[in-house]
Length: 303
Length: 327
Image (cartoon, rainbow over all chains, first blue to last red; front, top):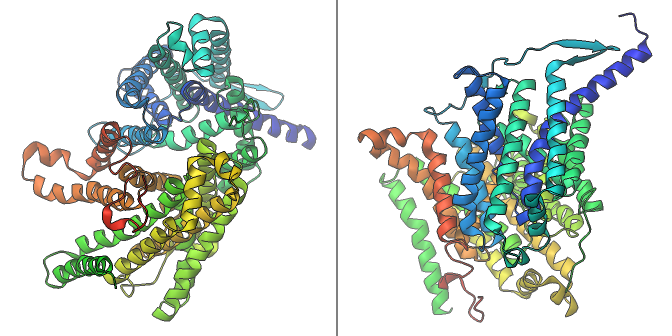
C-alpha cells in the first residue's frame, strides 16, 4: 500500500475498533435483555444467554435446512426466541414470583442447563459445533487502509437502529411507560389497573427478540454454533449490563462496547489467553468503585 | 459420655462400616464406592457454602474457586512426595490457602450485597480459572496430573474427613460466632446498631467457609488425581449452590440431603440406564446425553414445588445443638 509506518499503525488501531464495534453490538443486544428484565423484576435471568444460543441455532436451521435468506432467518429467529422467552417466563418463573429470589435464580440455572443439554441431544442438534453457511453477500470496502465488509455495516447499523428504537419505545409508548412504572414501584402498578404479568411478559418478549437479533448478527461474523456458546457470551453481556448500571438501557449499551473494546485490545496486544479475565476484572473494579454501575443511580438504604 | 453422643457415634460407625464391608465382600462395585467418596466432598463443599450463604447470608457464586485453590495447593505439595507424612500438612495448606483467598475475597466485597456480591464472586471465580490457565507450574490450560495412585483413595479417609469437617462447621454455627453470622443475615443494620462487628462476622464466615471448601477441593484432587481449570469454573459453583438450595438455605443437614439428591439424580441415572436398556423407549431416552436434561427438569420441578428447598431452613434432629432450636 506504500503507507508510512505511522499511518499503518493507525489503520491497525482503527481496524481493532471496527472489530470491537461488531463484538460490542452483539454484547449490547443481549445485555439489553438482561437489563430490561432486571430493571423490572430484579432478577438475573441466567437462561438469557441460552435464548441467544437457541436463536443462533434457528438461524443455522433457517439458512442450511430451510434455505431462507437474511430476512427469513431474522423473522424465524425473532419469532422463535420470543415464543421461547415468553414460555419460559410463564412456565418456570411466574409460579415463583412470590418465592425467595434465590429459588428463582436456581430455576433459571435449571432452565439454562435444560436448554443447553436439550439442544446438545443427538436427536436435536448434537453437541458438536456446526458451521453456518454464508447467507448474505459480503462486499469488502477499504477506506484508508481499514477493511470494512457489508456484513459489518449491516451488523452495526441494525444494532444501532434497534437500540434507538428501544430507547424511543421505553420513553414514549404506553407499554414503555408501564414498564418504567413496574420498575419504580412494583406494588402500585396493579392499583392503577395494569396487569403486572403482561408487562413482565412483554419485557421477556422484547429481551428475547433482541437476543435473537444478537444471535443472527453473531453468526454473520463468527459463522459457528454450538450448544454451549451462550454461556460465555451471555455472561459477558450480563457483565456489560452490570458495568453500565443494571436497569439502565443506555448503560448496558455503553458497557457492552467498553468491554468489547477492552477485549479486542487485549487480544491485539498479544495476551489472548487473558481475554476472559478482562471483562470479569473490569466488573470487579466497577463494582468496588461504583457498585451501581457507570450510569446507575445510587440507591440510599432505608432503615 | 451422653447417650446422644454415643448414639451418634454408633450411627457414624455403621455408616462407615456398611459400605466398606459390602465392598470388601464384593456386593458393591468400586464404582459405587467412588460415588460415595464423591458424595463426601460434595457434602463438605455444600455445607461450607451453606455456612457462607445460608447462615451468614453472603451470596457467593465463587465456591469452585475456593475448592480449586485447595485442590491445586494440595496437589502441588503432595506431588513432590506422595506419602502419608506429607498428606496432612498438604491438606491443611490447601485449606489455609483457600481461607486466605476467602479473606482476600471477603475483604473488598463486603461493600457489596445480594446479587452484586454474587456477581462479584462469580467474576473472581472466573479470574481464578484464567490465572490457573496461565500458570504453567501447574499445567496451565492442559490440566495437572497428580501421581497419587490409589494410596489415598480410601473410603475411610473420605468418610473421616467429611465427618470431621461437617462436625466442625456445625459447631461454628452453634457457637457465638454462628449467632453473630445469623444476626448479620437477618438484619445487618439492626446487628450493627446493637454493637455486632458485622465486618468481622462476614469475613470470618468467608474464611471458615473457604477453608472447608479448600479441604473439599483437596478431597476432590485425591478423588480424581487430575486437576483441570474447567473443573473449577463458575458453572461448578452453580452446582454447589444447587445442592444448598435443594436441601434448604440455612439448614446444614439439609445440604447433606441436597448433595445426596444431586449425586443420586446424576449417578442414579447412570445406574438406571443399565437396567432400562432392555426396554425399548426407556432404553433410548436414558442414554448419557439425556442425563443432564432430566437433571435440569428435576431441578426446575423441585424448585417449583418446594421453593424453599426440601428442609426449608429446618435441621434434622440429630444435627441440632442441645440448647438451641433454630427456626
